[in-house]
Image 1 (tube, one colour):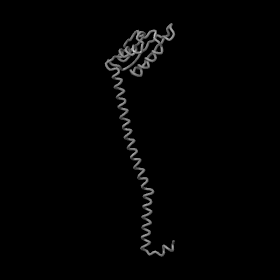
Image 2 (spheres, helix red, strand yellow):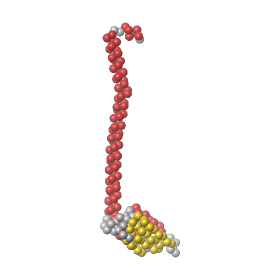
Image 3 (cartoon, rainbow, N blue to C red):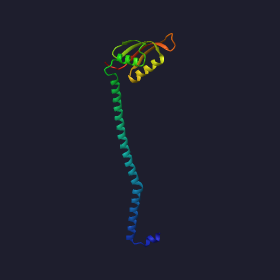
Image 4 (tube, rainbow, N blue to C red):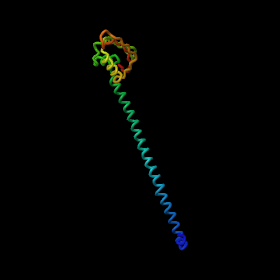
Length: 162
């Protein structure tokens, strides 16, 4: 190989040296630089897509919160806390056991139920909490002489407005 190189004239050697250098630069570009550049471009595009998706998710969360707030407001719209508790108790079949409803300020109500079945009572309280967004502040349960029936004193707090 050395003999072959020595047989070449200086012009041929310069041409081969320049061609080899150009080939090395081209190989470095194709094998190293271009894959890194393409990978960087793909990553920038993925980040942009994920940022757009995050913005959409945040907007969706705000819309869901607004819809939830509107549903709660509409559920109690035009109805006082007294009305909400009375109507839901009667709808749950607790109307005969409902003895007294006493407002305790703007956002609390005291409820007395006598000889009420325990399981329907629990279902009604759960429904008040989930659907009407009322909070159970105090619960006093006393047994009666009949199995499965209890006397109950409850204080509820909520945001239903007249």
